[in-house]
Image 1: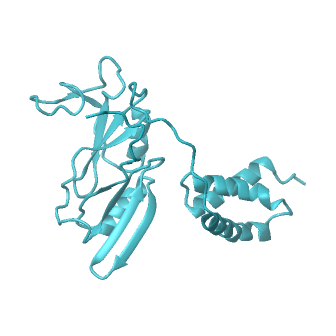
Image 2 (image 1 turned 120 degrees about the vertical axis):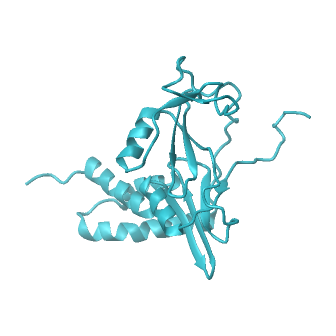
Image 3 (image 1 turned 90 degrees about the vertical axis):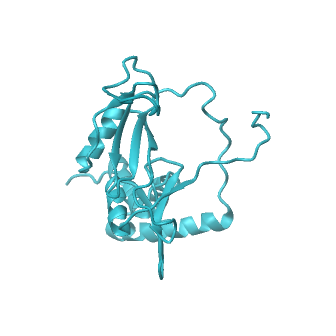
Length: 229
């Protein structure tokens, strides 16, 4: 079988679906981690909550009626981080019980040996080899894996970003105008495009409308400060 992917269709890991026993509790837990809420749909006995970790292209889904009822069945869900100490510090500050840093005696994810986890970082300081772990309220297990340098061949060739279609762009501009309106009514005269630019940039990079509006406000304060009297 050929490993040549030049003519292969794009396939991106998009979503991991797992069970929880209390949807609102799980939603609050992941929101506390700073994860983006993308969807929360409830229709009768069905509920679909879709959330995304910061800067991740893959998301999670949980809810009611989306999986067989088996809370806590997800094991070793991996979050790649470039600074394991900083990631642990952030989670601990959010009230999450995070393990100490460890490495695997037989190499990453090797649970076939006795006492597979060894306390402390990988002695050789290798990328991919140092971990920490935490659980959500249902016992679904997450691993933080420190990846500072990707191994050769681990990055797909980049492709140009897709242009927004006209309808999507029009909708985004309408949204931007709506969020700019309160700023325009309460601040001194300014060029609307100076506020629009940071808002649109933030939205295209995954921020929520509220986060994008706050980013645009900060930008205006920093670049166009009001002179003191």
